[in-house]
Image (cartoon, rainbow over all chains, first blue to last red):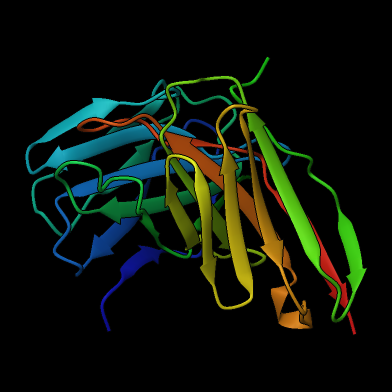
Length: 115
Length: 112
């Protein structure tokens, strides 16, 4: 089945620790995204990548890092610099080209909590 | 003021009711309007997609866009308990890559 796989489903971070969230897609999409979802707030864009080996900061990139070494994979690292990391993290992908990135396909999310 | 405003609810309706979900926005450059459905602790899934103004129907779902009023709606006919979810509106400008802006979502509960 084509889709986006996020792992793990639940993740706990200790103080001062970096953690990495995995995102893999087999939809052959060029573009991939990371969003953060907090109660009472809309989805906020952390980072996005339109092509392999290239990525841009979104609205709330501070304290996060990403890499895009393969088309299928877009891991997100939550660093110790992110002081409020507890949230539901969503990875998404889309086709590129004119007028296509509004059709986002999402993974099932990772809930990150601080111990 | 947020670019996209959406009442978070919750909205409770009896099974079979017509549901109306709405968003207002302030950015007149928005051209693409989407509705996503999100079940609890799952990723959103695209439900409806509309370009510019007008209506679009898909089964029990109808999306309406009124650009003059900066107002979009999603109607659900003959609502079912399986429609219980959070509905997120989303929109973006036209042209190349443009950021998608999401509303906070309206939580809907359809009571059997």
